[in-house]
Amino acid sequence: MCTGGVPSDHDDRVLHDFEPKVSIPLEPVDSVTVTTLMDNVSDVLMPDQGPARRPKPAADVTVPAATMESGRTPDPLRAEHGFSALVTVAKAGREHRFLFDAGTSPDGVVENMRRLRIDPTSIEAIVCSHGHFDHTAGLDGLIRVLGGRVKLPVLIHPHFWRRRRLTLPGADPLELPTTSRRALEGAGFTVIEERQPSFLFENSVLITGEVPRTTGYEPGFPPQQAWLDNRWEPDPLVLDDQALIVDVRGKGLTVLTGCGHSGVVNICRYARRLTGDRPLHALIGGYHLNGPRFEPLIPRVLADLAALEPSVLIPAHCTGWRAQHAMSARFGDVFVPNTVGTSVVV
Image (cartoon, rainbow, N blue to C red):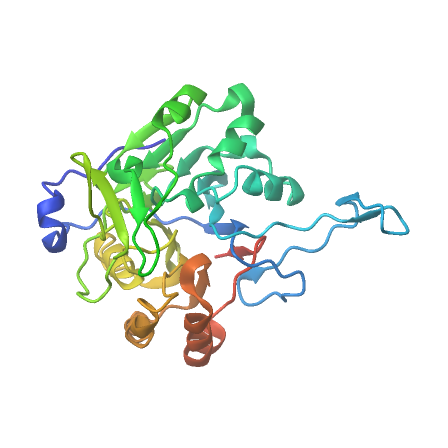
């Protein structure tokens, strides 16, 4: 399943200077479908747009409700401050499914999979974009649903396990829940730690590993600290932040991010460098442009994204409403709003 990291002498000390000496032979696929299993927004009235298909309400998906005349009410998709997507890749008549992140609550993603009639046992591998709990806590529910059938590879960066906290002005430090290695391995997951790019599905799905920070203005996540050497130390770079890349034949690169702590411009430029300067077709996931520290960056980020000439921009999760409004104004139909249950077919 995973063919391992691409050889390199890259380490933390040269993060900002690392450049791949040769392009990685990412093989094109016939199609990729990205289905959002968890996001901050659910909207049953959102129309289809471009490559995005919205879930249709199912009359038979209901729950008891004593206040309704019929005694039942629709059982809607859940939304929460988190992200998860199911990636389905098709090539030469074969399909493979991967889970990218797992949302915030223990049961949110598996419950949405049930509502969308997606079989959890069809997942062949899990990729965690980074270690923050709003992308990982749903693994708990997946373990319980799969029972003894958990035997899945989980691709992470070594910093995924770091104990972390947020230091926000005017508030006490807030420690974040940390994923337990013992719990994942005890459940049967095969944990694969890579700093470097690595492949899934016969060289057709590329995981970036650590993303070089080359723009000079995308700051990572400045409020973050990590417990290192028995004390709290600044940990703003979120080096475990990684993205997923698929090259669709005749279209170009589809890039999927979790939060985009590496910087979405850094991620997209790196994706192109890794793949021999393949064009960027679609960017889906968190752009992390929400809040007073990041909103001033919106004009510069959108200008740099425009220079990459994407055909589809689908921001999610932590992107923020100001950035989404700005994208709608600048990019027109290239901008596609996301909702829980949306399937993007490239």
